[in-house]
Amino acid sequence: MVELCSLFSGSSGNASFVKAGNTNILVDCGESGAHMEEALKKIGVAPDALDCIFITHEHTDHIKGAGILSRRYNLPIYATVGTWQSMISKIGKVASDNIRYIKGGVPFGAFDAIVTPFETPHDSCESVGFTIEHNGRKASVATDIGVMNKTVYENIKHSDIVLLESNHDVDMLLKGPYSPELKRRVRSSLGHLSNDDCALTCAHLLEQGVKHILLGHLSLDNNTPSVAYNATEEALVMKGARIGHDITLEVASRYTPSAKYTVR
Image 1 (cartoon, rainbow, N blue to C red):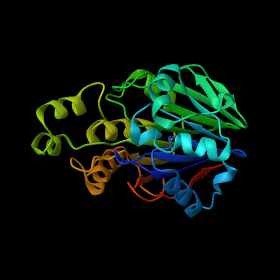
Image 2: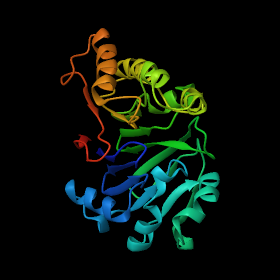
Image 3: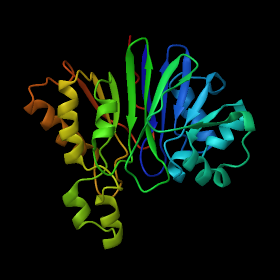
């Protein structure tokens, strides 16, 4: 059994709860400790029931509460060497036993879960996404990706549940308030995935048996939930999918937990 719920998703903070068998995992921890605890309680998870934290990369909206929760609940934090080197000064002291190093493309076991971190194209140091498996079921988290490349797609394609970035509408970005430099950064191969690229990916994932898709990390200035949803909905319907029957589709909220998606 695997279960996935987005707790927060966006530039103000990112965190997802994943359950694999009896293992309770946070993927990213980008809100304050108090906000993280509050969000977990909203979905019926006691913070002291967590087993570990996985970090995708060192940007503040992914690590803000990681040190706090690790210290408070004695939680191991799994991250790449590059991510650890970049974030350790930002999250405060972490017990040596709770510093766990991982490498993109190298699976590892975490309690009941089989986890594969996969390299992601983003302007950070050794960023990764994660697939988390238990008894043949699989959930994936893939956000902060500048482009959908073969590595990312091959890792997430046979998932049951996917949290995938749908960051911006290209036209809104180009006409919006960002500086030219920031617009180039967002659109670059090390920036963020657009609605159109996300929608195309989701159409392919439908053919690979994905049952639940959560659209995440929406830009506050260059996207809206309805614009992101409509782009992917159109791509799925064009493939013949019946939303809510063949596949579920939801936009992860910036501030509140999503539905819990469970496959057994």
